[in-house]
Image (cartoon, rainbow, N blue to C red):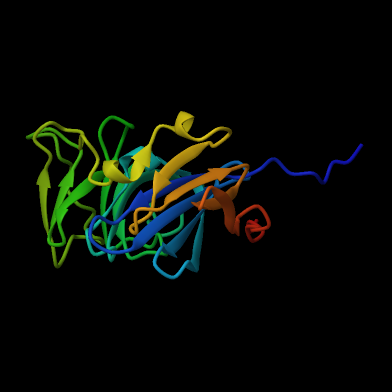
Length: 213
């Protein structure tokens, strides 16, 4: 029996609204996530940090210029924050997860957010329910507010996403900033050009570093 054969990785995509930048969250193996920045105009990829835990892609967002990334998740092993807590919302500079601002959470209710513009972040908490920022990671350089309806809906990058059924066999379908159809299947990113599938990148060979004991 071949025990070395791997299950294809999973991919999530978060688009910047005004710049040709996408954050790709590459998931797999279990509890391992890597952040990769994809410059769609040139198909240049910047491989970033591996995360040991979970990132909730549906609660993530990019600033319109692609410089700031808000995410919600938990760390399986403490890394940046010394004391333990269940989960948190954080803002980082892609392709790194290292927080430049962080809000602890004791549940997965709410959390994450979206950028109204490059200088304003809306967090997925109702009015009066926003947690205080961690004293080591207070936001600087942008304003923070509660999203009026709690969850950012529709997501700022909704226009880049299509129903996967629109392309046979695809696990996710969207368009890049140049309006070209893109999709992924079995951990491989493709672009459709003149009705031909063009491989953009195979993410399956990426291997996370060993976890320190």
